[in-house]
Amino acid sequence: MQLLKYIQSQGVGSRKQCQWLIENDCIALNGEISNNSKADINPDDIYKLEIDGEEIVTVPMPFFYILLNKPANYETSHKPQQYPSVFSLFPNHMRNIDMQAVGRLDADTTGVLLITNDGQFNHRVTSPKHKVAKLYRVTLKHPADEEICMTLKKGVLLHDDQETVCAADAVLETPTTLMLTITEGKYHQVKRMVAAAGNRVSHLHREKFGELDTQSLLPGQWKFISPLNP
Image 1 (cartoon, rainbow, N blue to C red):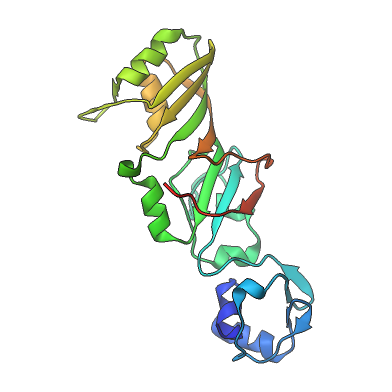
Image 2 (image 1 turned 180 degrees about the horizontal axis):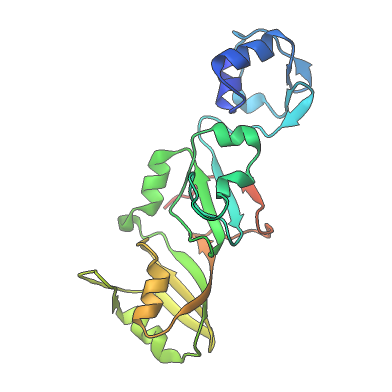
């Protein structure tokens, strides 16, 4: 890959802006100034990228996969309406890169959120036919008993839907803490399922997406990961 194309791919700026940075000795790769825009480089060999003396995060090529511990009061959208976007949690140059969340979490929902620029991967892990499990810790508004678990596993009819939706698993840890596993991704699915079972959700946290958990990341923290294999 030519240096110019690589710098553009990192979200640094337009082609013209990147060309100017390269020609004016503003780009350093692995500690060495690189001023030949046509120089052939291997992105996998780049462990340090500096722009005008400032090190920036290097984004894996051609595809990247991000695990984010989503905090509350952030919208999973590039055009948020009420709260900041989850994409605002990334460095400025990364916001210029085309990337999408794998599914969505409501603004008030916390926990595991995957973000990628790999559209095929996104489709694959969100497709119902692959049945990738998502585990949620549901804080219930009203105390419940084992009946709610049986109801959810048997299946509930969501409002405006024609078919019942079943939980892959449901375990009541305390009267107000429900561990719910689903393999679909319908709109507000967990909240609607709990409502259909006669209760309400007061807080929702995604514990796992497939085998991925937050891996001790604090709310708002993120890291690059290897892709899931559904």
